[in-house]
Each structure stands twice: as C-alpha cells, then as structure tokens.
Length: 170
Image (cartoon, rainbow, N blue to C red):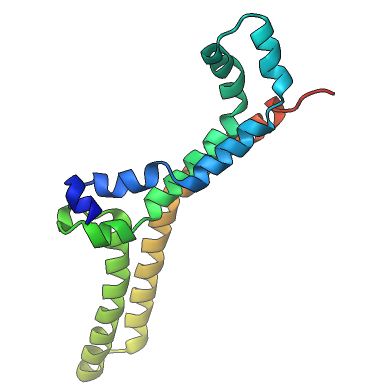
C-alpha cells in the first residue's frame, strides 16, 4: 500500500528505496564514528578547522573501511534481492537477475520432471538428461556469483587499508 501511494509500484525505485538506508548500516557507521578518538577532531578544532573540513580531511579518510563494508553489504543485498522485485514488479521486462535465476532454477526442476517422463516414454537414457539439468543449474549459480567474486578483492584492499590508517600511536 505504501509503495502504491508513493507511485513506485512496478518501477526500479521499489527495489532501491527500501534498501538505501537501513538501520543496520546506520548503527555500523555510528559505532565506527564513535570509535574515532575525540583527540583527533579536537586538535583540528583547535587549529581552526570547520566541521566540514574535519569530516572531509580526518573522518572520511579514516572511514574508508566502513564505507567499503557498507558498499559490499549493499551490493550483495541488491544483487541477491529477489523478494522485492517478485512482489512489487509485475512487468517481466523489469525483473532483476535473481528473479530470473530463481524462475530458471525452479522451472528447470519442473522441466526436469517433464523431461524424465518424456524420456521414459521414448526410451531415452535418464542419466544423460539428469546430467544436463544439473550442469545447467550449476552454470547458472556460478554466473550469479561471478560479480561478487570480482568485486570483493577490490573492496578487501580498502578493509585492510582502513585498519592500517585507523591505528593511532599511544
């Protein structure tokens, strides 16, 4: 009802807006900001830096690790989200990859049963058909995982760099 009132039903925005700012991500970022020592921002204030300058030159560079973690979580969440498109998008042209993947896998199971029945009626070896469907399902799942596998090493660099930059000598 809420999405219909906003006029975003059957659009891409119905998949984006609910996942933009979740409470979990806000808690992670807030906790990270609280872990930054007050002495860093206080010394910048004493030197005459404005709040925006403190954020831009001190807090944001220290926060690359948490930003990349949130980016990874959000990216994986968008990539794997099939519920919102399935429920709120009714145009098959606007379905996302996970919805199509899910339909291919489940329809593949239904087609598998139908092909087994046809193979039995025609006297064809059932083992060959099972190998084809298992191979197809495995290939589809691998294609779904490849983007995450490619993006993760890039973001991993930011995790390690954020840990090194955030270290403060006592």
